[in-house]
Image (cartoon, rainbow, N blue to C red; front, side, top):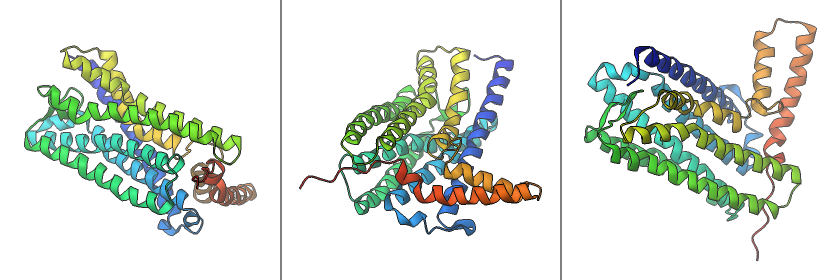
Length: 321
């Protein structure tokens, strides 16, 4: 059982990690919506490549899911103030945390269908609807069933499935997590092999494999300590350092995804350039130097938008006749 000081530290860390994720996911969401023509954006370049459109939509949905999950992790112990609020927090965490896991698997499946099975853009676009139904609908049904069975209670960090129902914790969450980890590993190996036979430059293939490694690594890192902590709790054991790492990493999923998919810290990524453009246009004091940098950033942004996705993705080899 954590002491009062440890509980305060856990709550503070949950607040920091969740807030970072919310801001990161919101930034990616705003950028992608602007790319689609919202907020006065120009979506002409966005619609040019069906693979780019699909990928951007997948990342957009992931960012929204991350925001929904992080916003309820952010509440922390507030869920323990009343039974009704605890049920609400537990329901939303179960729904959207599980949805984030399932959607990671769906994104991997989309990549597998494209680069390994060589599905057409039309087929891949239809798959997105099935993936959304599985993720939002399927995970929502699981959350509703657990709510109907009155399985939500305070779970040391926030409200979730009560420790009295360890089987439900495993089969309704962590079993799905472990399956998704295994499937993503399979996709990585399959896509890496397919990339060797793909047309296009070696640099693009290397970038793709690097992003896949980061994708799987961040996904495993986000949930590893959560899995260890809940396993220890299953055996009525708990260690503060594991509990702290659970609180530290799990809410950071949105931040990790922004780094990998949004390219938040890649120097020439469209998202990074969009942030710089916004800063120079609206936040920087007027000057000749500011106007010069604004013009340079705008030119780099337009160039990056036209070629960023194509330049980092090898063209899959055609289907054999």
